[in-house]
Image (tube, rainbow, N blue to C red; front, side, top):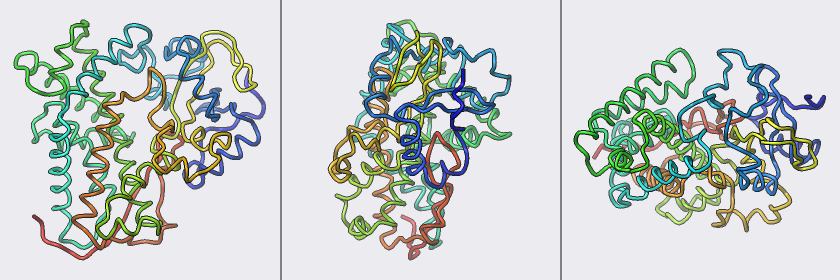
Length: 403
């Protein structure tokens, strides 16, 4: 039964004032909030830091198996959140138990073997190419012309794609994210490209992520690996692009980071970490499903109920945020990469950090007098409760020649 005080998980406040909205939810409902998804589908949003730690740390009670959901009979074809929640999808997101651990090990080992110096070189090269395309103009949108183009180019190179395939993969992935009429075409292009790369590497292995995944002896099919590569690409691209955009916004609007705009670099890492605490790209995640009746944060959770992971809400939980400066000053105990066995693999976190930091540093190196081209309050966010990022970041700078 849906509580009468359930909160619709949508609306402009997720775009304009999410921090205040999460505070009000916590004040009015506690650490576990009854919410309504599209079509008035009920779920629980876990905002408490300790409660979220409990949910993500107990995969037996709170499973990743979406087949457990007690609402499937109420979900219509074409429901807008199906791509996010999924049903009977053969990817790592929805496998559980020993098979999930094998799958996570395959991905983690393949990513861990990435040469960090090679990763940095690729990120610098692609970042420089993108800056070359805009540096002579004196103005740019660092979201559309930079942040949304960089991460997938680097990831594609690490996976084993030739550089000439990169622009097509960028277009396909951004079409999928856009979620409109081009989304299916983008998904088809990405899946076909992954399948072709896997077939190529079956016949001719190389020193890349895909070849290492294929070399794993756990018996995964090509279709399973294709699905995992698509998940890895989507999960690695958009949040990293938003991490770049949100960090640049912070550095361009907050006087504490002004020194970094004039040759300093120490504050880049501080700005990036503060974003993960205060403005994390992945705000909420679906989800976990209760395997039996239980209680969480004083709420009666029934078997098959969906729990949404309120990552940003937990990061700002006043029960643990006694001193904001202490927590943001290098502390990485945030939930921005998840927690538990279904969290983002540590090698993937490291790759995302290198891409984001390199992307930010190249902007500051190449465009040293960069400044916002609009008032800070005019910067618009994506109207989503799930992923938080800027729609545009207009900047101006003194034109410089391409390298």
